[in-house]
Image (tube, rainbow, N blue to C red):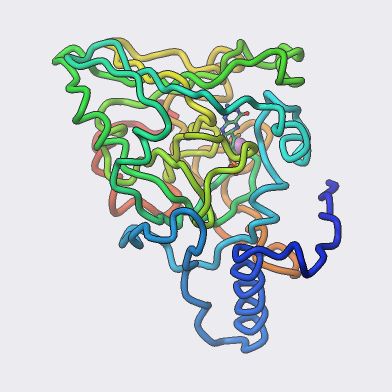
Length: 313
Ligand SMILES: Nc1nc2c(c(=O)[nH]1)N[C@H]1C(S)=C(S)[C@@H](COP(=O)(O)O)O[C@H]1N2
Ligand SMILES: [Mo]
């Protein structure tokens, strides 16, 4: 795997965010040097979302570097290599942008990005576990999807939520490959969508989302595999029947609707028992045990009480 190195930065080009990121790197190095001591405290944003309050739902695990989070991505619309999105997602047109919220709701509404930024934004540091067997810790800025759902007032028929992401064939070199039936579509059950851990992210490391991470707005569902977190959302639809997701349509035997992180349910090509934790500095990735619901079981296990998680994978 190739990771592109950024060009050297001249001191005149250093922005407050670079200083912030560097300081974090230094803190990490210091933390790692003092083996056995506590990890450095979570990120303190100094970018556009500096004022966002720190959430109690954040993990205190060390976040991956901004570089790792923005150069090791899955965003197949821009190619299947991990480094392709950082190169090609520049082409994504993010302005003007609207997010249409529709279907089984009393108050359908189309949000502009500025409307979304009026929701109560928080910094949430979450683990992201990819089904391919790697994980990262990412400091998002975002708001609870629940807040938006309450504004549009779902009807009694709304049992599931469908998330549709951007399809810009002229700007997305990856959609020529018919890996998925574009646009990329994901889905949640209504109670999953309403769960306070479920986030609409608009930023990371205290600044607006880089395109490769799903600008201007992406879903984050930390107890599910990364692919449930659809990037660059354009439509949220409330529906009565369980939606077919893009991954389910493509390979139904490998990708179920739920896709909860579960070390006991292996994927045919990747064991889910362990994961490679990436991006913690200039050190070899750590191999760690994967936890049920990605470690968020205390908060979410009740959603699946009585369900056979091997059948509903
Ligand atoms: N639209 C879209 N969203 C997507 C994907 C994608 O290919 N297209 N990949 C998913 C996968 S497999 C993962 S692991 C996460 C990665 O998020 P990150 O690159 O911000 O870490 O995005 C998810 N969201
Ligand atoms: Mo993934």
